[in-house]
Length: 188
Image (cartoon, rainbow, N blue to C red; front, top):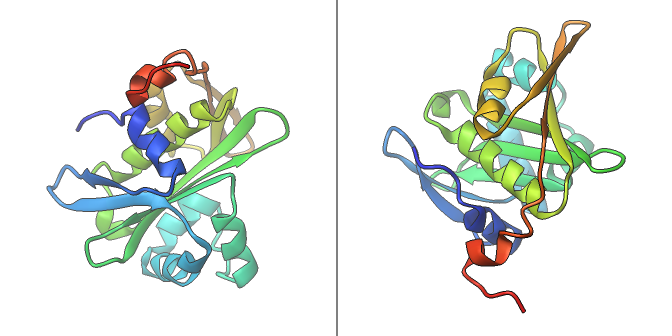
């Protein structure tokens, strides 16, 4: 699977979707989540197993309008849309105080283990770099090491353990020096 290009992630800010082929040959369009996606995001959560939802939220939340608005209203919210226009994954990045942000990814059970979550995580990290985050992190149940492995592919991570949870942190270096060349434009 090819690494996500910074230019592809930058296009997501403009509302353009990025078509991505997964390991099993299926394609999805990764795009910015919109408020009108609330019903489809709720339906995706219903199709997910209780275990999948619990790994994402550490509980099984009610899909209220307020909850869905919070999900879709994070600093960066992405969805993956299957060819039949069904949303099959969601990824979020919410800014904390300062320059830190929390990452989260939920992939519908039938679409897991095909590289989709990793691709969406790569886009979130690239987008975080583009807008100046200093660090991104995720909080997982202890033993759920997918995030640690996926973030370690991108850079040196730090893992903190407390109270049955693992926090995996990835410090980010700004990419602004590379941005114009990566996007194929010239610096003014």
